[in-house]
Each structure stands twice: as C-alpha cells, then as structure tokens.
Image (cartoon, rainbow, N blue to C red; front, side):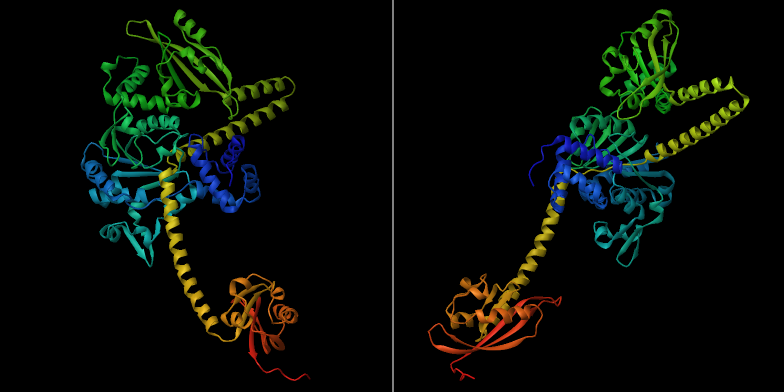
Length: 617
C-alpha cells in the first residue's frame, strides 16, 4: 500500500477513534500508530485513510479489530524470568519483611490480560503468606484495552498460558479444570482492574511499587518527559519502578536512581524542595520547622482540594502549582520557576498582573468573579479567582496565592435566580414555578456531582498499555514463524501428493487429459505425450479445442462441455492419427472432475488407442 502523506486524514481518523471508543492517542508515537493502522488497512484491502475511516463508519465491528491491531497485548506470566527473580529478591521480599509499610500498594501499568499483576500477587503471597498478603497488599492493574481487561478480570487461562509459571506456584495458586487454569480467589480479590490513560489522567498515589514495562518508549519524547514526573509523584519516597528491557529513560532522569540497571529497577529520588514549598504555602511557616510527615500530609491536602492553587513569589516567579492547577490551567513542571508574566494564565481569562500588584500594594485580598475560561475542545467554563497575599513571619507580603475555583454551576444558578427574580415581579404562581425549577436543577446538579465523583474514583484505578516497536517485531516474528511452519507442512504434503498423482498419471499407458471448466488443459500425462507428440509444457494452459494434434479435438468440445455442465459421463468412438502418422481408433471416456465439496470443476478424458479401425456403419 502506498504511503499516505495526508496528515489531516490521519488526524481525522485518530479523532474518530477517540470519539467512538474514548481512546486518546495524543502523545503516542505517530509512526507506530501509522504503521499499525496501515497493517490493518492492508489486511482488509482498503487504500487511503479517508476510505478507511468511511469503512469504519459503515462497519462498526471493524473498529474492534483495529483496536486489537493497535493495542498489541504481548504478555505472559513472569516474562523475562531473570528480571522477575531480581525484582523478587531485591524489592518484593524487602517490602514484605519491612515493618514501615503496613499497607503495600502496587500499580501495574499496561497489565493487558492480567498475567503481570497476577505474577506480582504470587510473589508477594509467597513472601508473606496468603493471609498476610490479603490483609496488607493491594494491586491496581490498569490498561487502555477494555477487552483485555475483561479477560484479566475472569482470570481464566489456557494450559499454554501458564507454562511459564513454576509448577509449585501453578499447583498452589491455580485451580485446574481440564485445560483451563483459574487464578486462586484469594489472589484475585486483591487485584483491582480498571481502564486508565497514563498520558492524560491523574496517577494513582502513595504507591510502593510501579511495574511499567515497555510503555514509555512507545511515547513521544515530550510525552515521556510529562509522564515521568507523574510516576515520580505516584510513588512513596522509597518507592521502586520496574521497567522493561528496552527502556532507558530513567537512567538519564534526576527523579530516579538506579538499583539494577540491567533489569531496569529504579528507586524514587525524593524532591524535598517541592514538598516543602507546598507545605510553606499551606502552613505559612518556614521549611525547617516542617516535619516530613506533616509536609507530605499538607501536600496531599492541597492536591486533593477542589480548587486550583498557584503561588507567585515576590519576584514574580511561579513557585507552586497544585495537581488541579496543572490539569485545569495547563501549568506543568516546566512552568515552575518561570516568570508568571510569561505564562498564558497571567492574561487569560483575565489580566492578573495588575491585580497582583494591587494586592502587594494594599495588602488585602481581591476576588474576580465568574470569568469565562475556554480550553478547546472542552466547553467554556466560568472560574472565580481569589488573589490573596501570603504573610511572612515579619508581617510582610512574601508571596501571592491565586485560587481558581470552577463556578460554572454557581454562575448558571445565579443567572437562573435573576430570571426567577424578574418572574417574581409578575405573579406568585410564576414564583412557585421558578422555585420548583431551581429545586429540580439543584437535585440534578447534586446527582451529576455524585456521578462525577464515582467516575473519578473508578478512573483513578484504570490504565493503558501500548507496546513498543520491539514488541511489534517480536509479535510479527512469532506470527511469521507459526505461518512458515504451517506453510512448510502444507508444502510437504502438497509435494508428496503431487508426486503421487504424477506417478499414477505417468504409469498409466492410456492418454489422460484433465481440463477445467473453461476446457483449458490442466494435466497432460506421458500417454498423451507418446500418443500425440505434444509435450506437457506445450499443452497445459491451452484450450482443448485449439490443440494441434492428430486427435480431432473439435469433436470432443461439445461432449466435454456437456459433462462439465452436469451431464452423464460417457464414451466416444473417434478415428485419429497418432504422432507417427498412422491411423488409429480411439475410445474416449469423458467423466466429470468432482471436488470434495461435490462441485464439478472440469472433466477428465481417458483415451484408449487401438490400431484397428472399425468398419463404417
């Protein structure tokens, strides 16, 4: 298939996939996405991205096949056994034996069909006992592929899937039913599966161990740089990251230090300055007086708040942004330490620098109500901004706190209330109607808020796995090896059968001619060569009626066609001239060439030649 240079067509297709399946591929390597989409287009014979998008719209079931092609779920129990043994001895046993972690939280990112989190569960259960494991350990397993998650939740695998599980573990943690193996119930109830996009959604927090194998190298460089701080934030201070063999990003990152570079084990390097700065914002005290536990609690409180917070120091530098601010206001790690005036939020949705100057000058807070804020493709919202001074111990203003609160619902309610007040001026009946509408609106808003909270909790335990180029090549090689083996076996069978049939045809003295439904010659045995002087390669592929031989083939065309069309087999007596020029008498028997499905695919002519010519009737 030719390369598709139309970037607009590619973006349109990705947008359609996101709209149809809720899968956001922003941040993932475009070359890999194009390669997987092209592979699927070649499989179904569609040329062009626009044509393929139209095909998806006309055939909704194809979208599932496309997702299976893009999201390559290559996984197995204890994949790369040596790396898992290192993880077990270096991390798992130490965590299990430590009395510093009464609760152990593990996050398996890109869990596919579940083999990876269940492998983790078996290691921890072996290290601490099944009862203690069930009390202390919680494993969050996330992926982008919902069908793969459905398989993982069933926890049922075929015999070939569990071959990599050591026999003692297989006997202990699987229930065997025929050729099916079901993971032990005590393990299953400690593993929580969910759908999650690590690129765009908030990470699970306070995690002791993250397993993220061969996902990062599938992302663009900028996306990797955005994801790594999220994973750093998700881990506790001594938390460990377990990556795949092809990933080397953390070897260059200051956020993690290497434990075992060969097997890709890294430990979080705490960024105390970030923690302390958050603590200062909330508590208004010096860093030296903040104990680590209190600092962590204050930071978690700020990140859990329903408002977005920014802190600007006396020099106009952005020094703090909580989790909601990073998501709502498009402020990332790269923005910390930059002049506030250089950031888009300083002038959109409203010019804030003048208000910050007023707060410093007057030492009093300012509130800016219901500013329209639009971040495409989302709908516009209304936010209220509180600009407040932060006092140092000497009473001077040392920084400015900006609080951004989503007041969209409040703004809409205020508009409804204004309309209701206008209605109050007319009749009491209209007033009652307005009150009822407001009550209904409040109930709907409360219900929506509860649904959003529930959805947010579920989304925080969800995940996605996208494989790398090396994984694609491995999957392709495995498929090609299997296909080559089948083709080799079929080729051997076909060769044996061909030799067998050729031997039969060549051993037969009578001339045998096989034609297809178009009466083109498909077989021409040795008897035919000897009788008519025409070699096999000169006859095969030519219409029977056009052969230039001593046999009057024109007399055979009609009877052969009759047999092909379903007529009865029969014999024809005709006179001919053999290759030596002698007159001979031929008895031609015509039978139908019937395949195993009982369909007629041609005819078989068996020609017996005798030197005697019968007298004319």
